Length: 426
Image 1: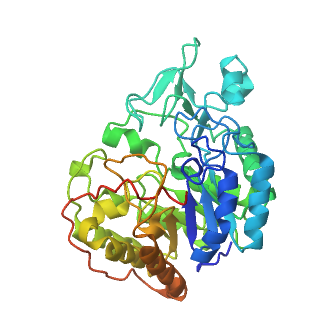
Image 2: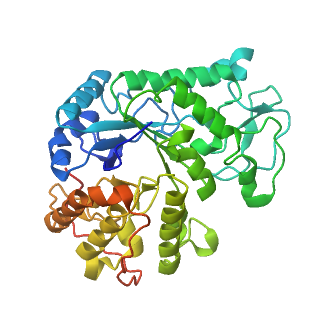
Image 3: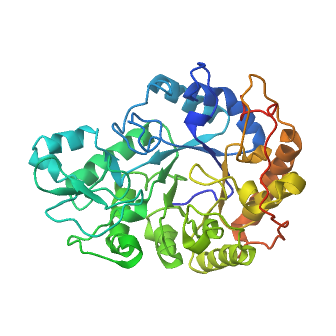
């Protein structure tokens, strides 16, 4: 399972991208329109967040049908055209696969609720809940209808965890992966994939909300090898990345070492917790630059020694914009954007760019909505980003550890945009 380590991946959150219908929701045709622009940037692959049918309780990560297109985003014909046009321009597509859980609206869960024993074994049902805490708050178990049992939901109560110990659910999920592979996609991003390996006997775990009881369990590696063998493993150059929640370097080496035939690379989030006060996500404090530098170097060096491969990023759909977090954007917006780009494009690993990052996009504190938008800083920042992208490709292949780039001082100031600034690529 060899990948081209020179590639750059560009993430698009379809709902917030180009809207071609005027309904306020981005769509697949909007992505098609912008493919020439993305080719000009020099990116090689587009990662799309979920665009499947969903009740949208978790912005599409609660999937009710794995092999269809949500009408809000377009049609299957639009998807197929997008892949075809992308191929003509030298751009491949990576899809988000959410295989740890599905929506309780999915027919599997509905059949299970109706009493079908076959489908009940698709989920993790217990007579008594453990003390695990959901990542969305509260206990991670909910009553399973009027059966007296409880089902596990590590995330929202409408996202029921799937029982990977059941070979039938693995078979169904591998069919999903192959369905989209056969549609011409060349990569998959697997959502919280290191949580799929729950133990057969589930026990209380008072440590860290119960995470050690279900995170990076040894059997997870077995499941990934099974999936690799049954789906993408035989495809030359196919790229896979696992989103790893609360993971370790040691496990990410195991997940990504090519000879193990699991995944191509791994996301970790430790470097994006350096501005969490007391380790709590929904808090604000100035970021710890020394810790950020230490984590970047440690992960880069140790993954290199272990023959693992990092997916490098600062921004995505779950994170505040890095410019707001790590840069004094009032005084160093262009320089800060270039610095952040250099730190991932010149490091060992595959860089992932979140839409708008190439034009120095930031989070807004306040905004006055108007019908006309322009970007005052888009072209200088975009040109700097594109130059870094193109010059960095050879250096990423063999560089043993991340480069050291001094950070501008962060004074915690957030820039409020003028009402004349443009929504991304509108």
